[in-house]
Image 1 (cartoon, helix red, strand yellow):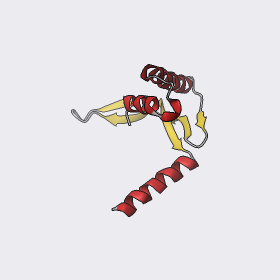
Image 2 (tube, rainbow, N blue to C red):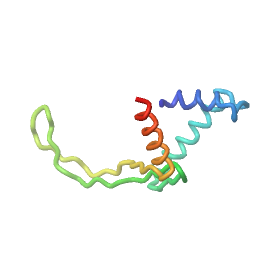
Image 3 (spheres, rainbow, N blue to C red):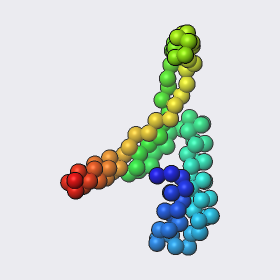
Image 4 (tube, one colour):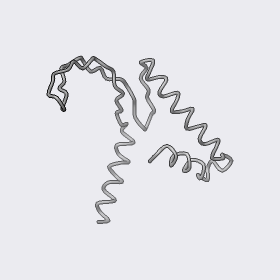
Length: 103
């Protein structure tokens, strides 16, 4: 699902009939901006039933330029990591089982 598909689905949802597409777009943007900002500050984000976002540290290492074969240093960095919550894992598994049963 893309960002625009999420906005369209939110705007079309009967529970949120009062939301226009523009309102849905602003809501999605605000939520994603808040999540990005929290991760940029080094905070962990936990959404019960969905999952958690945290930062993983990757130490510096030696890499290789695939074009020239030359060894190049790769600096240390922090990368976002998502861990699915129990409820999300179960819903995905149940959906996967339903699809396989229909085949």
